[in-house]
Image (cartoon, rainbow, N blue to C red; front, side):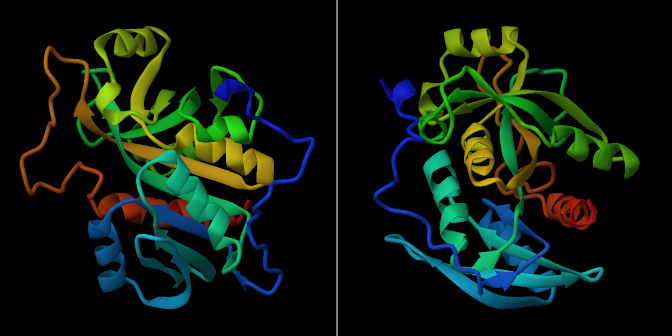
Length: 254
C-alpha cells in the first residue's frame, strides 16, 4: 500500500544535487501563479540566478534584494509532486533552508470571506508524495504555523487558522469526503501543503505557508466566488506576494 512507502533504511536511486557553492539566499518564495510571476518581474528588481529544467519547460529562479535580505523567487506547478520536486531540484541552484509557498485554496466554510488569508495548522494527507518522506499518519503538523500567524497578527493582516485537506484529485472532492474533512476541522482544500511539509521535515528545511480563501465548497453547488478576469481576492492577487515578501523578511531574522 502507498501508506507503507516511507523507507529511511536504504538510499534513493535518484537524489537531488546539493551544491555547496550554490547561490546563498536568506529565504525563497514560490508562487503557482503566472500572473504573480509577471507582477514580480515588473515591480521588483529581479536578478536571474538559476533555472529549473523539466520535460515541460524551463523556469527561472530570481533574486530580489529586499530590506538588506537576499530573497529567492520562482514559479512552480500546481500539485504535490511538482511543487516538492521543484524545491528539491532548486538545491542545485540555490542554498537556503527557508521556503515560503503561498497560493489559492478552496474554502470549506462559507463563513470565511473570499480573499481572506488562511493559515494551515495541520494538513490531511490525501496525496501520495508525503508517504515517501514521512511515516504514515492521517495528518502532518504544519510546524511553523504559529510563526506565520504571529506575523499576520503583528502586521494587522486579518487571517484565520485551521486544518487543511491536501488532495491529489481536484475533480474527486466528493460530497462525502468534503463532509468528513469539514467535520474534522478542515477549513481549506489544496494540493501541496502536506507533501511540502513532509519533504521539508525530511530535508531539515523550514516551511512557511498561507492560502488565499478562493472558491467555496460549502454551498449547494460549487461557487467560484469571482468573475472571469477578476484578480482581487484570488490566487492571482498581487497583494498576497507583498505579504509573502514581508513574511520572508520576517522569518529571515528568526
